Length: 177
Image (cartoon, rainbow, N blue to C red; front, side, top):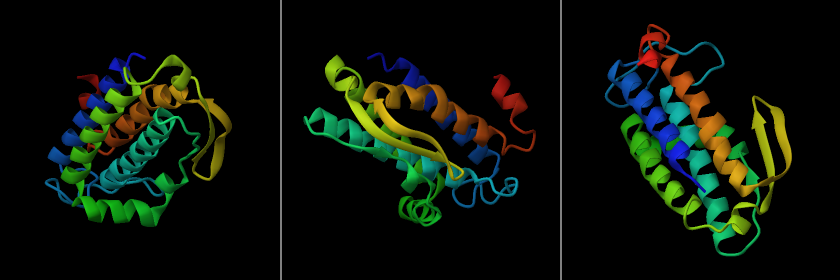
């Protein structure tokens, strides 16, 4: 499996997170300080990064379980839990710690999710439950490969846009570069 798109998606997310932190936008901790508040019902930068870090850990657990020859499930509900998100922000020390954790998780996922797994492992159906804002998006088996490519094609780019939208300009100038 080619993990270059996944690596590129992580790079874009981390670049956006650093840009947002550098502008002091949308973060409650870290070098940027408190910036503009996100729209009602949306996450700030730290919450977005904690959500991504929890999803990464969930994905790494599924990939590792398949790699050891066992069955697994994939459920993103912990990555939506407010208490868990806030706890992870505290445990990592905030924005900078979250960005470093995501960078390391990205390295691990790209190494394990690519050359380390066979096509049979990547094609293993994983019972999956994906929610977004209390709406079930997926509640069916999904091949492990699709969970990984879903991060690269949907999840990470979506959160990159969400981070850039926290910038005072709404991210338009930064997104164009």
